[in-house]
Length: 258
Image 1: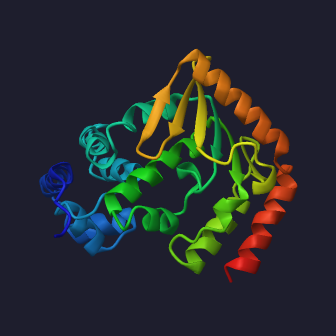
Image 2 (image 1 turned 135 degrees about the vertical axis):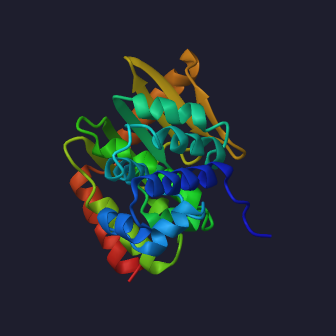
C-alpha cells in the first residue's frame, strides 16, 4: 500500500492555492518567482510534496501574506512526520546554545545529506524534509556551537549506495567551521562502542538524548548526565584531532566509495 496523504500537507497546499488565486497570480508565475518548476508548485498545492520552511516563508513573502499565515500550518507537520518520543528533543535542540554529539553507527541528523537521509528514511520525503529542516539551526545568524565525534564505523556502513556515501563523507569534510567541529575516534580505542548520545546545553542547563534499540530517550537526570558527560570526555580524549579526522574522512571517501 502507498503512503497515506498527510492531512496537514493537503491543508497547506490548499491554502497556498487559495491565497495565490486571491492574489490573481498564475501557478506558473508564482513558481517562476520562487525559482521552482510548475510541477513542484503543483505537487505542493495538491499535498504531494512537503516544502522546506524557507520555501514556505518565500511563498508568504511573494504572496504578500502576513508572516506566519502559512508557517502556522507548516509547523504542525512535525506532529505527523516525527515520532512522538523525538519531539521533546527537537525543541531542546532548537533552543540549545551548545550541542555535543557522539555517533557510533550513522552520520548525525544535523550533518546528513538529502540522499543519505533518504536512504535511512526509506524514501519518506516528508521525513527527509523534516530532517533537513532541523539543520536550519546551523545557518542561523548565531548558530549553536556544535561538536561531533563519530566512530570510524560510521564511514564504512553503506547507506544509499557508493555515490551517496562519497557525497556524504565529502560534505562532512567540508562542514567544519568556527562553530562546528568534527572528530573521528578509531573503533579500537573508542571507550563506548554502543549507544549514540547527544548532550545539549539549554539556558545553562544540560539535557541529553540517548539512543536505544527501541527508541530515543530524553533525560535531564543528574546521574544520567554525569555518566554521559564522563563518556563524552573519554571519547573526545581518544579521538583524532580535527585536521587528522578530516583527512581520514576524505581518504575514506576516495578509497572506499569511488
